[in-house]
Amino acid sequence: MGKLLVKERAVVVPGEQIAEGMDYLPAQGAYRKDDMILAGRLGLLTVDGRAVKIISLSGRYAPRRNDVIIGKVIDVMMSGWRMEINCAYSAMLSMKDATSDFIARGADLTQFFNLGDVVVAKIVNVTSQKLVDLSTKGPGLRKLYGGRLIYVNCNKVPRIIGKQGSMVSLIKNATGCKIIVGQNGVIWISGEPAQEVIAIETIKKIEEESHVSGLTDRITEFLEKTCGKFPRQEQQPFEGEQQMDGQGPMDEEQQQNE
Amino acid sequence: MAYTKRLDGRGMKEFRPIVAKAGVIKNADGSGYFKIGNTVAYAAVYGPRELHPKFLQDPSTGILRCNYNMMPFSGMGNRVKPGQNRRAKEISMVTEKALLPVVDLREFPNAVVDVFIELPQTDAGSRCAGICAASIALADAGIPMKDLVSAVSVGTVDGTIVVDLDYLEEAYECEQGVADIPIAYIPSTQEISLLQMDGEITKDMLVEALKIGEEACKEIIEIQKRALKEKYSVSGEGNE
Image (cartoon, rainbow over all chains, first blue to last red):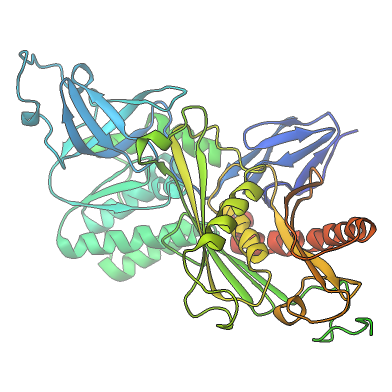
């Protein structure tokens, strides 16, 4: 009979023996050696039925289809733009995925996106050779003006967004900033300078303390202390950004990690 | 006279006191610290990231690039001259080959994982300390790997087998001479991924020494695992 050698939700390190026997199956991040299942990376052990998988706690962003990310234009090409997306590979935004407008042959593409522009985009495809294709067609996908960018550990993004985007709307309500969180660990913040600083502080706090329980309460307390009482709004997805972070791929990510 | 008592009073199969830590360099994607006796190694891992120049890229897998460096003020100033030289290049190369069997970079075609190993203080066994630190750093960086690698040197001093020679032992002058054999060991597959030697040793003693070295490595790997768990353990609890 198969036996689990490590407690569920424990931290495992590469090479650690996780389970014995053929009853368990190695999934993402684990591998089988003879009748043992060993950890293939550092992370948090989760058991889903018979499948044993390891959720990563560290590491660079790995591009995945349908992720909404924030990128920066690094090159303007013949029929599209090359973007830096905070990972080992740059991504391609081609003209047909960028806009529905008619673009004449030989038109100057910098009128849409210029070098250094910051863009919210969705990953439409990732090939085995890690060629990444982006799209800016869709709700909330657009060029960003002003504001500032911060970089966080992409494995903490689900914590920063919170269930159904609860955490990020908490910060938005308290600081009055517009915030967009990209799955690649890039966050765009725009608002009053003093409030922006508070938002950044809060996000850094979440990143550091994401593992300690009662996170939402502590963050609420922290925000009340720094911003004073703020109207605790129910979720009202009326703004583009707000809709976005509580939707689709981020939600899925959230559920996976809960 | 045979070597019956070690110069620093350790047991023959005893390695020097070890301190290991993970996540000591905040800017890096992963980092490790490994101190064994007076030898101190820091390792920082960056990547996977884009690899330039382009001709180095491998479309079938990511590559691992190690850089071993003794800091200018490390060592005792008498034997090994620190800095980029033939010796440092060779050690960078063997470190890379010692770590390569465990890391799996097929998920990162055309990319590179850079490992920088710096030694602020050395007292023999620096390549082994470097490998141990690098293996902690790679795991900390979330790189897919089959296992951790641990390394230690074994050898003979005047005909006696010892583990983890320090500089005084390495330079010990005696009738039968000294053999110094750094090894790196992968516990899950029981493979040796680094084997070098300075000096002379008989076949029987070599086999015996390797067996003792493997045992020492198994103990060291536990220390490395503990270092990694210490950094992350809190996140295991109360995450719900």
